[in-house]
Image 1 (tube, rainbow, N blue to C red):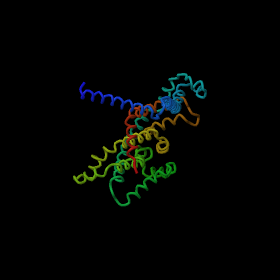
Image 2: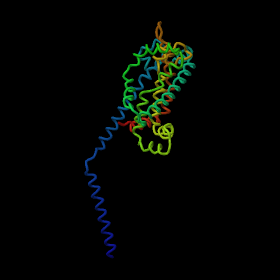
Image 3: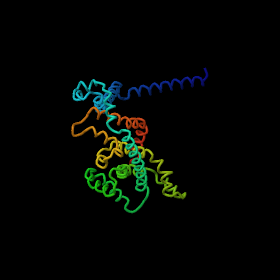
Length: 308
């Protein structure tokens, strides 16, 4: 046997011993027991299932009530085993002009969302990128709007709407909600998290403010705009008190006002109301589920983008 072969074999034995020593050290290190990991996973899954049941319980109650007879709505057996009265849905649909209500709701929601996205983007860019005197004071003044309860302003808002002849119109349901303090705040925080060198380089290349906004700023804050758009549309879809006070005609009223028509002075038709709640909730539920991935992605990006 040559010295080269002997050295190679000795080196191989040394490498094997070294690897065995590393394995023994790794196995000797204190780690998390396997049983503890499985127990933690089981507990987290159990908690997730319980939370899911708690969240779904009100929706199940509404659906079960919509399929019951009026006499079984207050009994536990009727909730656990509905009587499958599908005629409650046809009766609820025939009671009100739901086609018009859906059209009004989609129109108001889409217009409000578009206007909110534009104002949030413009104001957020101004507060986050532009430098002008009194910027911080003006931003704090804008945030102070969140401290004022909306119900306190209903009477003066109603008086203003009467003076400008906006009662019972689409304008009174769109324009007052065309700007969102939360939306402006979120977009501003996104812009503050972007490197200023991007805008400095664009300014050196001769780009104006609007070009920097549309070509550089808007793609960067797209996750924030997605969150603002979804929140605004869902809030508009569920709006009830404002249109109830500001509108009187079904030609401009949204679906939530239509649902309230089942509660009158003679009593409340719970089965028809729950049926109406069910078929008016399904569209927005489908919308949210179809955009769930984008919403979660935008929320995670917003978590990393909100700074300072």
